[in-house]
Image 1: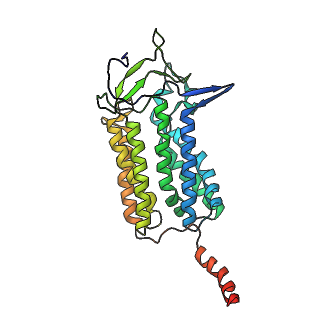
Image 2: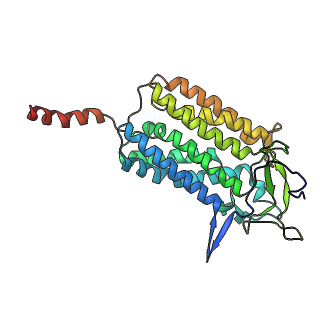
Image 3: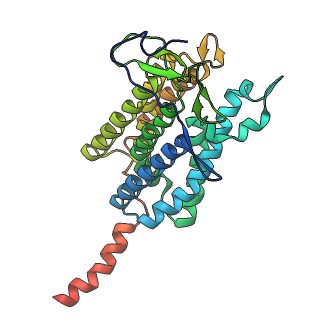
Length: 303
């Protein structure tokens, strides 16, 4: 193992603790990052849905359906695409349920999250297209914030590097949430690597800002903002998957998520081209007319 003194100079340190013990409760920083991302995304989604004629209550009701569906979908995608981590000789299949140790696949989360959102939208009477368009930038910010959970877990890094922003990675014990220590009690350092988690986090923030700018600047058709979310995120994810050095299942020499990102990029681009000329999404059909109908008698009485 490498010691910090072997490679002097600038580097990004990684935590040696990824969890805290509070009595009988274990608080995982990975989970806190995911939770913080959900809160931030929900706030921005509610704000953007109101601008489309909806209400905060509608946004929160739909999110209450979308989030649990998304978490289940994200975990299923991870377990299916990385099944060798949990099944086979010497593996612990119960680890598939230990979500706090990390492992959520974004595309499983988006797929089942859309199912939950569709149920919530139907129950609240809101437009699903309006909701997903409102949610797209917040979803990117939530992903960007959630990636810092990988920093706490010392995971999702690229190839070894000597760049000034190299990431120091420790050997971590996932069961305890603590770094493995050497004989003298110091944390063992695996090496210094490309901080791909940071690249993806920054990409998500930049893509969210660009998405909000385009949504303000242009009249994008219903559903096309969400289609652009798919395009922007997969473009970055494709590049970051090529940089990552952690083990993953491959198809024809490329990581599974590299293929998925490429295919979804093409699908998202095609979807955007189809939807861009549609009328802009509104949260409720006829909401403007309903407001005008309420206002009209008041105006005539005042006159």
